[in-house]
Length: 286
Image (tube, rainbow, N blue to C red; front, side, top):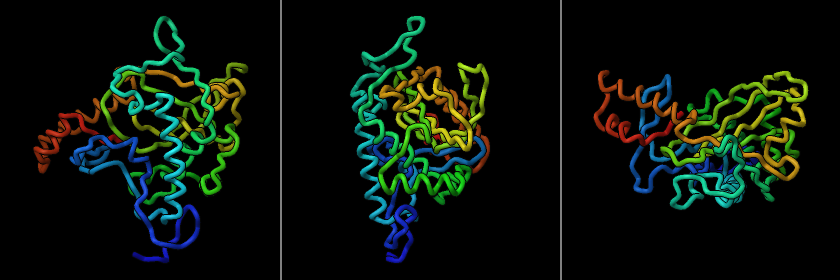
């Protein structure tokens, strides 16, 4: 209990406390306390009790700030049925704001009155993952200016303009296998419908509880007005793209993890308990 540890968020000294990178309320796979398989494409399997937390990131003062941001963000996500845990016992999204394309749900248009609170929630997750020293997040790297900018936004509970870190949301519209995965930094092409030209942009991919967020890291890139209209808080209306779980990237990744872990039964010293849990599809996917 060292009282002289430096909080990465507040930059004040105190005693570190356990802080989850992804909110536990959205990443708890079971309530009975069993451990779950964690694996990656190029990593060995191991077991853990719940999602990733860091015991050397923030003091209680910093954790109180993050907890308040999390509570507001989780309430919004569940109230608008953006996450599976907001569906009650439903196995498919039931809402009146779905837009159909060719007779199938394609996206939702939601007037999220608390969009700034939700924006701050996602930015806080990006900061936590980048500021954490856990090995699972070693490839999740922001530059110094980005890290400091996000730290100050979180500390002051002011996410800034939506256009600084545009956020796109992608929701699984059917209930699938509950799993977790660490945030990733990836690249994609932004199609500019006005110029008919592509523009590559980095983004942080955050997934939990059936919802994926793309938090764009512009790094000098320009985002067209038409592209921003597909992002969180655009003129008061947020577009949420819909995908069925069976057609999703998550489902494809889980199948790959199954094949990876099942192969271990032929490679000592894999334990039968790990293999049996893998077959049950109880996953933390990284």
